[in-house]
Length: 373
Image (cartoon, rainbow, N blue to C red):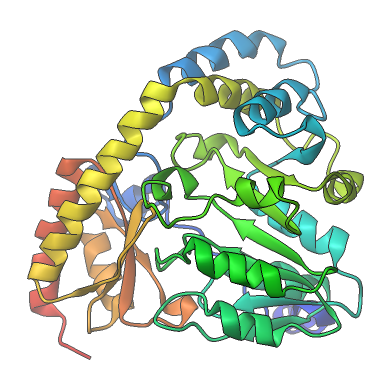
């Protein structure tokens, strides 16, 4: 009876909306399956861990935990503004970039407005818009990539936001500079492009990969989202940032929680931002291991999409959920993609060489057991 009451009381605007499911944590898998040695390749984390400078900054910040954090994150925003070459008024901080995805929908979408989103994009885009007013306009992907011309055609008089993840999670695919420029040129003046660049540090190796900050400096109607969770190795502290026109940043700050970025996160992010060597090592490891892992998977006859992120999209030609479960029993955590309507695919994060070798060894055993779809 209590279950039925709960269902009846679920708010109408959340009907049919699934919650975001993160990758399974190591401790949970160890407890559930009685395993002691588990490799996690499901959440696109930095296998090298955080910068040693960031760790030291945390030790120093511990003594002030009885103080509230700096609400506007002034020092961190100043450091970011200097590095990016933008005014401080164009930067705001979030509890991870997912916090900012939600804040943009809440601050810029009115009750009758809509947002244009790619069907295969990061799931949080659709979730926040549907929870806001249920007016998400979904556009199919083309060749596993955001179809920007089709997304532009989906824009109408009620559109206020268009979300673009570049590179995209979970596919790893990306849109070139000329494609994004054409999109911006065609957008009406009252539509804001939300450009999610969570994997920017890995992607900028590509000569055709566009830097959203360059668009902003030319006055483009865009907001760029980035994070310290991926290349900077601070996923556990939840620090992201947005860069946009001052009036958009002001709108976000109006509804942003007063202390949405904790003091430890701010201190660690400032230190990580200054540790260029740790970032270089992270990116070099990712690029090298990404190519080696992609080649090994293709040699096994699997479809692997080109990727500019720190992960690979792999089509197994068999049940991704079943392969995920069997890999879990072998102590390897990956990400099944059934929730994205890719039932035969997995997303695999790039780990240390020994982690990737462990995954391949376990995968060989599992592929021999699971029949083709």
